Image (cartoon, rainbow, N blue to C red):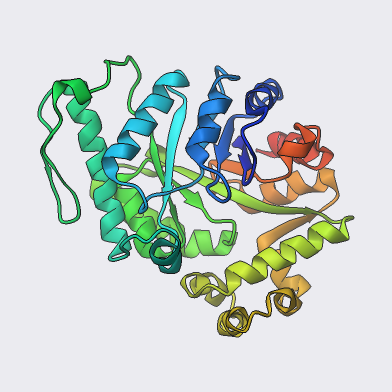
Length: 337
């Protein structure tokens, strides 16, 4: 099982140094989430400090961007990293796409499917030096003059992995993508009973099998001896549980009635009170807690045989990978997996 680092928020300062340290520690990949910073910029800076580390966006938002800009950026990062880049894309939710970015939200599964196919059509056009001819419902591409084509590269196009929570997006990912990012707000039971069967249906459509596809889980972990980390984890679970699109995960465990209660609290601005609704039992469904050397065992028990990669999201930035929680968890997980 591969082990990755995930950075949710970090400026570009010293990212090359951090990438080199992660590579030296045996880490397999470094992914950048799109929260307070552009994930592509982080990956670009990190690529200058690593020659073997897989670098990627985990994830970048797809719908504020078009297929051609994404094709250019991913191509350049893949070339610059020596063929070690992964393009991770996710849809976000309607409110953010419309109100934070001012973009159109409609038919997200169909649009994401077409976006992936359009990106690949651009890459194929460049590789073959042939015409660009993509005629879809959302994207129509038929112009690519010679001076707008990048130089030939010896690297294969980067893999495209999609984020999904529901079965429709998961099935589509299985059909057209190279992998799927399992949201931290997921449980092994939900993945086993909902996500994986959907992915298998998509793979069958494309004539592929499970070995052709990567499942990448981004783990919720917390040091059991740190009340601050436990409180932060409880707040994070409450935040995600308030989202209507994620109710299916709660329904899998018979606690779907939490979602409308928490959603109402967000409407009332009671953000600080939401965590009180997350019991220890609910927290345990989503978050592995314990001593540093217990974290890896807990992750392994839940995800070995389901996930191909596990990404650990901790405060790498301030600790430069000297965080004992991550280090102990990684070592234990390697022994198990």
